[in-house]
Image (tube, helix red, strand yellow):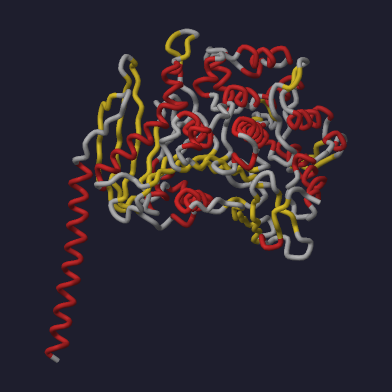
Length: 538
């Protein structure tokens, strides 16, 4: 009995010591967090640094709705805000970093933004990384847009003059600070620098990743850059093509009409890959003819609509991409996309539809080409006008935000790894934009096999912009990048899954481009094990 009492007493003491030790660690972490020194940032001056320990931080409610798996999670972090400026320039660039108070995995992750927002909402973009043990950060890029992602008048330094310093902060310089500041404060807090650093972004975040690989090759060991908005000046103008078509034809199709074309194209081209699964996999060989739908009557709510020649023309020319009498101006979108993304329309008070220019590309024309806040894109209705916009874009923008340099040899030579996946049904950034860049890199570096040693591309049939759509979405692809960087295990496939409209789980292994996922003709077409990677579809 005495022995049992002694054992209980000893265990109780051990438990109390453990609790006290944990409490001491947290209190020590508080002190270290609150007293972090300002990082040294070459070429910039630190205006301020605040560092506050925060406990049981929940995810943003919107993020929890998007990803229910995080709904009941919380995280303890050192929340750091650093504001920088540049000598001789009246600017401010912010960097936000979250450092887990416990369970750091020794890694750092930079988080990308979207549209004209370089980065925002720590309880969305930094929450999951911090929960999983990552130190993580993002930049506001100088805040050239408002809370709605709309470019603000401050982008003009004067009438007809773009503030190029602000554009540079958004396009590139702020991204570099995510690496410099983030790694510096992590080293100060943990007593050692991150062993590995990664970038993770899609859309604008994807462009940011490519900019880092092109301009700051030493900043991140691995870059996950999906559906990247490359060739920014030309790409942004190309996003206005659908609006131009609708304006010039004075036709603004309803969601029902566009959906009928999407469904018809899927039906026509679904089987090109050898399996009928409701997905266009071989989009480049889809020869769907939109004009065959002319005259068809479809039901839309309480009314019926007859497909017009103008609507068919809009769909066909979205596929062809911007063209002028002088030739092709930029790439088009493959069939099978949700046209409401690129061909956005407004519902007017009388129930009819009208123009509704897409925000980011409309801002590009208004603020950076026309440099006039009063400019109305709905007035662009002739081929001469749209051609002039391409021709008059200031060439200086290419060097600042183009993100089109195909020479990635510096990134390759420091051992960097770049991993990209892009949805074939992306309705906002055409997959052909990414393929254009990948081929350019191959021409510089020496062909596909050489490029694959450090830069790998995967296409996701049926997947929309960064997620969603009607095809399997890559599942935790960042894990594949980590394996590649840290274990030299280059990914040959990316596992992807989703639940289709019939509530069935569908999975596939996305193949390393240009290989394709070929059905074996025997197994369950909804299971990844029924597919192998092949050079082409049979």
